[in-house]
Length: 279
Image (tube, rainbow, N blue to C red; front, side, top):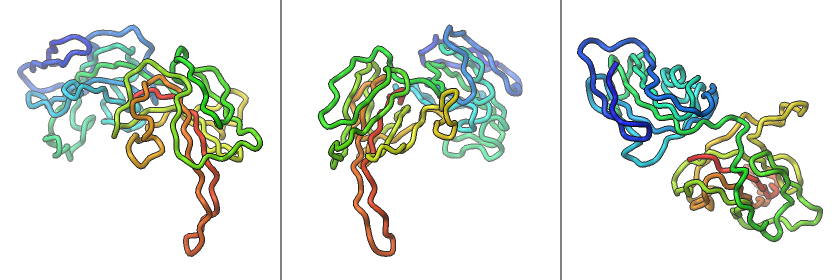
């Protein structure tokens, strides 16, 4: 295996030995003290990828931003799904991936990777976010905006939303901070990992990412956090600048009925309470 210089959180440098690369290999260069990564967790990582004996084709250190992805669900190359599960958060991991565990015989021409190239990754596991994780339990509460629904539930746990009888339906899109976290501010044109509960203005469920609790109808629960686009023209554009760890109220106005060949019935407004976990 290559030797690696640099500590956790620093951009690594790899030195390759003579001879042919090994089969799939994992070396934990430094072991963290956090919880073990489980399949389907969302990982927050820094990483560097290099062709065996060749060029670096990607790294997050130069971008100055971590990368967030779900592990064990075929969202990344197979060798990551295999090599990063069961490792403690806070670890630096060295992976050597033959083509079958990387981009296969097709390679990745956009990254300069051929179909016979062995890939080497150094991955720093910054955080692992499980299906039940909420925002900061110690976030600082802020006043609930006038005309908002009733929000209950402890910070860091699944909230509930109640639409009081007679409450005026909102006509404008908005984002309001209910409790302010201490993480990095969300940036424009990014993806935010969020846990949410949503209802429409009739009080009916409009979706939830929180898994169902024991004894609850399992069909009403979600499978854990989802990534949502933060950009102009989406309901989440108002999240720019809000710190990670926060709990926010997102309001999406209803839609009037349409007629004609693509007729649609009227849609009530939707409100969601979202915990902002990572980006």
